[in-house]
Image (tube, rainbow, N blue to C red; front, side, top):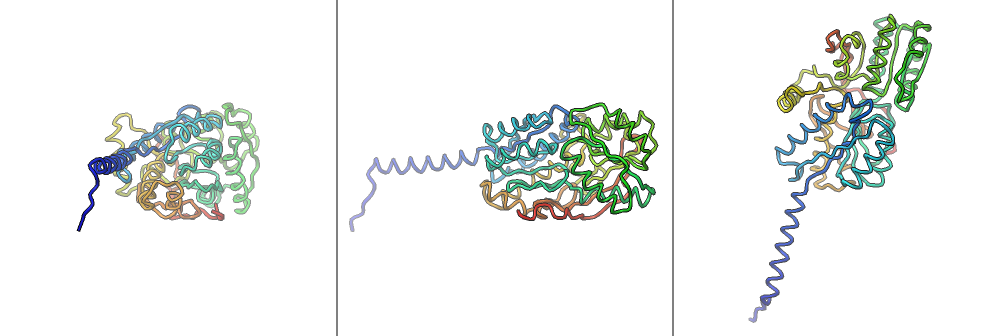
Length: 390
C-alpha cells in the first residue's frame, strides 16, 4: 500500500497553521473581559461614587483571583457621566464604541440611564442597572437588580399612617422622571390608604435652593414629608434646609442611602428610609463582604449602601450568566441573566421577575450618629408587573 505524506513544505504549513490556531486561542483566552462603568464621578452623585467603585473593584479582584470569567481576567473601564444626560451620552459612547466593553454595569440617575440606552441598543451590549429607581424601564439588553416603588413606598407610607397616625403628606422631589414617577405611585398609594397629599413641589436637577419649597411645606403643615431627589448632594442640601427651618413632622426619604446618611451627621437624624441593603444585615455573606472591603481599602473604606452593594452582586451575576451561556455572545448572556442567581450580602438575588428581582426590604430610621436602626423587615417583596412584554 502506498502512503502519501505531506511534502515538507506542506507539513511545515500544517504545523504553522496549528501553531497559529493555538496562539490565537491563547490570545483570545488572555483578552480581558471589559466591564464598563459610567458613573457620576462629578456632579451630585460624586457623594456616592467612591463606594460604588470600591464594591466594583472588590468583585473584580475576587473574580480575577479565582480565575476570571471563562479564563479571562476582568478589567473595569470607568467613565464619568457627570450625573447628567449629556455626560452620560459621552460616557456610554466612549465605553461602547471606543473601549468596546463586553457589558455595562452601573448605578446612575434615571436620566443618565435613559440617555445611555439608545447607545446600548446600537452597540448590543448586556446592561445591568444597579440602582433603585421609579420602575417600568424596559429594554431587551437591560436587567435591573434594584428596588422599584412597588417594593419600597408602602413600607414607609404604611408605617407613617398605621404607626405614627400620619394622615397628610407633602411630596418634595427633583423635577425629572425619578421624582415625578415615584410620586405618581406614592400619591396614588397614599390616597388608597385614606391619606391626603396636601402639597407637591419639584426643584430642577441642577437646583440647590429649596427655601421657597420648604416655606410651602411649613405653610401646609403636613403630618409627614416624603422626598424623592436625585440622591447624593441633593439629599444633603434638602435635609439641611428642612432642618434649618425647624419643621416638626415625620420625614421619610425615598432616595436617601446609608452612606449619604452617615455623612450627614445630625442633619439626617430621625429620617426614615427603606432599603434592600443595610450594612447591619446579619448573614455570613454580608460579613464577608464588609470584611473584604475593609481589608482591601483600609482607612479609605467607604460606607456601603443600597446604591453600591448591588453593583458588587451585579458583576457576579454577569459572571454567572456568561458561564451559564458558555459564551460572551451578548444575546446569549442577556438570556442567561434571567436564569442565574447570586447568594450575596442581600441574600439570594435573581432577576427573573420580568428582568427585575424580588427583594427583601428593610424599614429603618437614621440615628444621631448616622447609623440606621432597623424597624421592620419585609421578606421577598415582588416587583410586580414591570416589563411583561420582554
